[in-house]
Amino acid sequence: MAKEKFEDAVRRLEEIVEIMERGDLSLEDSLKAFEEGVKLVRICTKKLEEAERKVEMLIKNEEGEITFTPFVEEKTEKDE
Image (cartoon, rainbow, N blue to C red; front, top):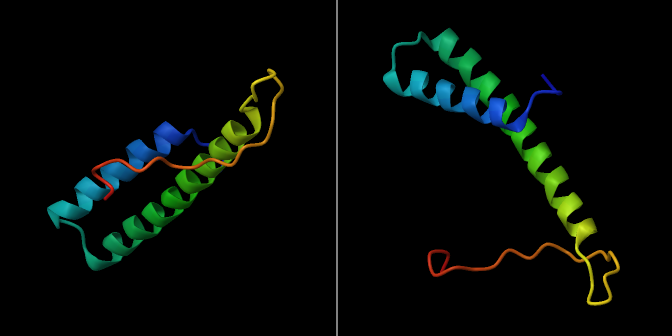
C-alpha cells in the first residue's frame, strides 16, 4: 500500500468515512475500518509532504536559478 497513489488513498478514505457514517458496521469492523483509515491518512500526509518539498526545491529566483525557498501558505479571509 506504500506505493499507492495519493488519489487512490483519498478515494478509499472517503469510502471508509461513508461506510462508518452509516453506522452499519460491528464494533470489530469499525475498528478495522478506522485502522485502515489511519494508515491511509499517514500515506496521504507523507505524499503531501514529499510534494511540498519538491515545490520548495523547484522555486526559481529572479536570475532563473533554482533556489530553495520555504513553502509559506498564504492566509485567506477564510483562514482568519
